[in-house]
Length: 121
Ligand SMILES: [Zn+2]
Image (cartoon, rainbow, N blue to C red):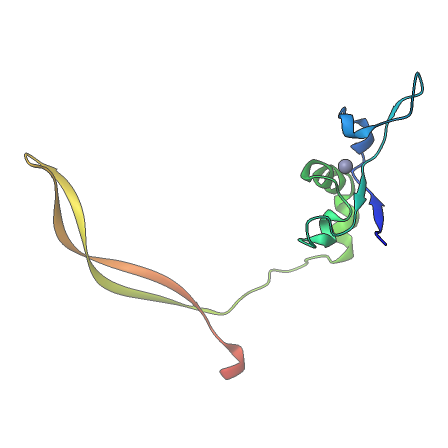
């Protein structure tokens, strides 16, 4: 048994594609796309079970963004503890000379962001 949803894109039924044409004779319509659940092997099925494509997803968000952010409002910034580690290392740069590009030695600085594990202090 497969389950289906109608695409939630507010303009889905107005896009002129052959896949949306239904009816016969002079009674044809453009119809909202019917989506089979888990059609991409379950990839991001929470989203793609309800939207036929990214355009419909963005149209929906544009129309309903105030309601969407009201579900889980962000009233203050979140923070992730980190350490910023700077370390020097030997490397080479190149400069143009009469003999073409030639390497020369330099000491460079590498900056790395490391997560701080809160569980182990
Ligand atoms: Zn759609």
